[in-house]
Length: 470
Ligand SMILES: *Cc1c(COP(=O)(O)O)cnc(C)c1O
Image 1 (tube, rainbow, N blue to C red):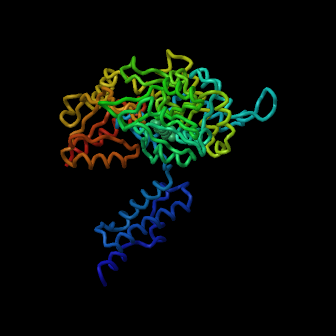
Image 2: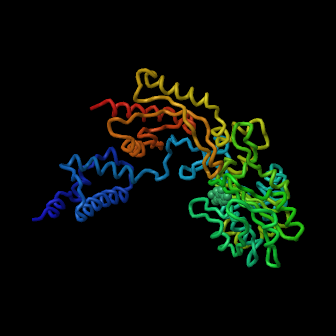
Image 3: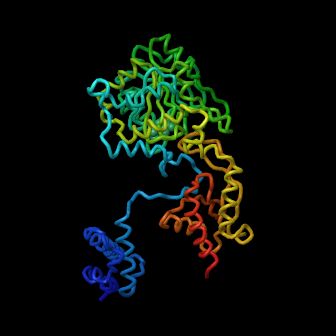
């Protein structure tokens, strides 16, 4: 008998292990899940053995039972989990971007558990438009004549280009042919939309005459793209939206701007960079503006298109629109978030993304002190856990070169090393996502929510035990 056969023989029989599993733990779990979890676990061991991997085979019944029970519980729990965001990145695409305020949950609940007037005009008793639920609000807030919302901003860009420039030319500056991430590249989206791309200018500088020289019989659109997650710095020049709009008007063509994040508030009074707001771009005379619902706006995933009425009407009628349509949950929560913007005084507090972006460092530091006190005080925990000033990021492709002053708990990982702990934190019942800097774990407290603190303390306690124990 060779080694492999010997190892394979150590694997228990499915029926035998099923009998030894603690029924208290698995009561109520569908038998399909239980059997599948056991089968998949044993299969993984078998594959590893056959592949010649260096693995430990559990010895004895109780070791097997523990492993299989864990596998069953894991298969029976939701795949989408709450996590603690210790990355400090406020609009983190991989962690779900923007958070909704609890007051928005009511709208979601209504949309989910009741029939609604989603596409039913209560005035006429006839079929209505789902876009009507938010159009007026978006117009009030942005100053635009009309608006439509779709699945996300990528869809908004695709749909607008397809409507306005199908089989026609769209002129774009070479400095704005960006890739946003998740394979969204302006040239690729343009070609899928049926618009043909005419590049003008140089990577760092594009002038009004570059656009003007490229305008011909086939030109439909001048497109401006927010460069989001990258910056060209130094000897640079971009054409302002207002000049582009003037040029387009002269030649009887249209302008479009993909704003990416698209904020409705100027965040510069809070120390963030001055970015043009959606209102400003609309005012500059750009015909169509697109932006995301879940970046700086702080709402659900959506793509918002605002612009001149007759253009938005054309976009609404595009058959492609049906495939990119926004769903009722998104609409319900988007309306709730947008309504918060009517009150400029309270919006910075009632939209979590804005609140987290503008948290004063002093407040973050006090949260850190509170956590340390709960762990027994600063002196008791030094040097294992220290409260240190750090910088966080906005994220979501917004303001890439800008950092926000913040405070972090730095965990000195002498015993196992930072990457061991980073991995371990990800495996906890409420996983914690962190940064590693200089071989230490950094838990940036800007993105730790008030309700996360109890769980974070539990994680830190187990870290301390792990680091102090032998
Ligand atoms: C983020 C972004 C997009 C894509 O928006 P999604 O809402 O993620 O689909 C498109 N263009 C720009 C400039 C962006 O920043």
